[in-house]
Amino acid sequence: MKFNTRDFGTLELPEEEILIFKQPLFGFEQYRRFALIHNADIGDGMVWLQSVDEPSLCFVLLDPDGLPGSFSPKLPDRVTELLGEGEYFCWVLCTIPENVRKATVNLKSPVLVNPQNASAAQIMLEQDYPVRFPLSREEATPC
Image (cartoon, rainbow, N blue to C red; front, side):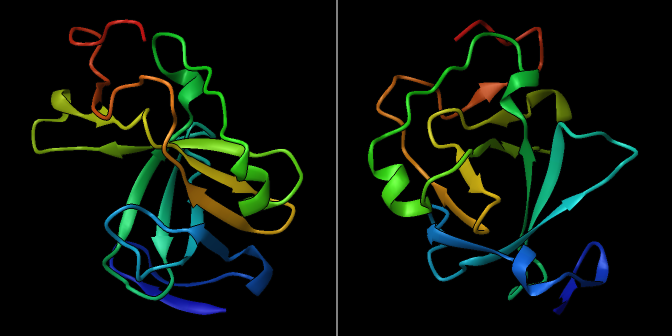
């Protein structure tokens, strides 16, 4: 499948690699089809979540295992209903303002991906994690 992006030009991925959000991103309910874009130069800890239907809609996702503090979410029971059985990859949405030192991640509502069936969902955790956890070590405190 070919699709246009604002930041990466025209990309092509096999249809089976296009993620279908069974529960869409909060505030972007009309967009359900996304691609994960990896950059080998950056490593596995960061990916872009690019809408295949809207070229200008792209998010930065980070692997929470690389963040300071302890992030051990208890997934709601309904996750299996949404995404099916399997091992899920957990990502957190990153917000990067002009002042990069004020970048934050949303630990309260991670994005889960089931690579076995290319399904995904943004879920709300019952645990008390911050919506705006600072990435800067100066501002971060353990969860």
